Length: 530
Image (cartoon, rainbow, N blue to C red; front, side):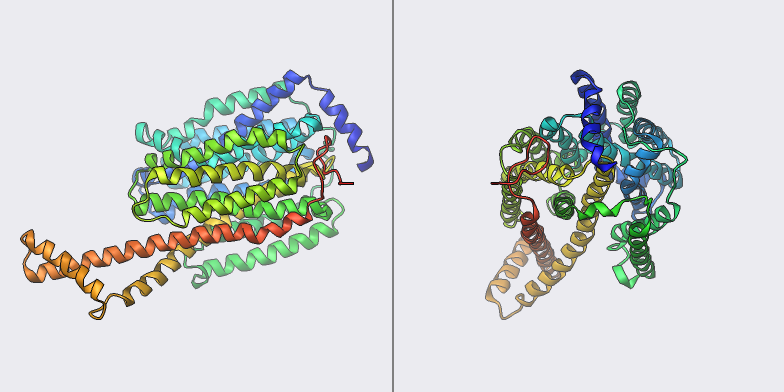
């Protein structure tokens, strides 16, 4: 019963010695880092995959889409699956599934094979994030949750930043299958530690218990369609495509039916009733914005660096690397600070820092150096450290017992969908703004603009000095001006994009007022001020 949850939690964490708890944490960290890295590390190897497998860009995109779609379908079900199969078995076999699928991904010799095994990877990867996080809440004393979740957060938050760096290095020095083979020793060690040291949760249910097949089906249709829509929307020109229109219809219908069914079902696959907890709901909604900023920013910056600045994938990874390291440095500090400072204040500090970093990036140009990018990226990394920790503890600390598993699934799903929405929206937005800015700039290039005429004449004279004939020099000068205009329009579109990301955090800040006042008590829940 729910009223017995606190004693059960106390008994459970006392079943493990301090040393064993840290061994389990290491195992869960290995799995989490492996899963989070795999989302971004593969993207760097896409060009080489296209060449080796003879696939187009649209076809190879299913390598990422298949993984993410499978991942987001399973994420909200991880609480149910952990209870049904037992936490130890579900987590251990998920690690094995992810690892074995990684082997077959590397051995794939056709696109279809690779996509199938990436889907299996995504199914296994969901538990490595959600069930792992729920396990930490159950096996560690509440007084340690701040620092424990900080250590766990290093893998979650740093992975998307480090992934491109590691992926670029592996691809440049070896070949694309090794971005999958690198998972094998990590997964083998993680699985061994889980099966050796972990026990099942006190809340595991009988396998003969009711299985909500209809709810699972509706969830798969709704979330799967929504994620595929977000992944493919920009490439398919959104609602100009019949595919996108049908996906939108299935997403709305599936999710609406899923919510209605789960709220009426006494044995739901995903217990949506936990949304009655104000802190959990507010933290989860803020998690959507966190995913929007984290994954959207990690997506948009490499496009700017590689498309406009012509950096290699490896160089881009190293430019982004300091931001991830800053998060890793700040997280343990915030893990200790979270029991002394109100989560409202910490989230506010992180949000303001993130908005400030986006405002600084607003002034990028075609000549911005990697050194000039260091400080805004470091500031963004520090802000992420202040955001992840209090959001996690405020959202999940208000839950207890079997609700923790369901809560971690929804919380991580929210961040994942926020990231997918961010990538989908920002990729469309940057193209749209580039078109708008180009039209505006072209209006100023005419014979009535003396500066434009002077610049065009100077370029033409320079080409003629190099031996070009007058007609050719005129044509080439116009081409040069066109490239300048396109480049400037493009960089202005990225400036607008950074403002939008910052604005999203500003709009989300009122959610902070929904957090309960006061500091986080040693129980991990907000303690009201007196």
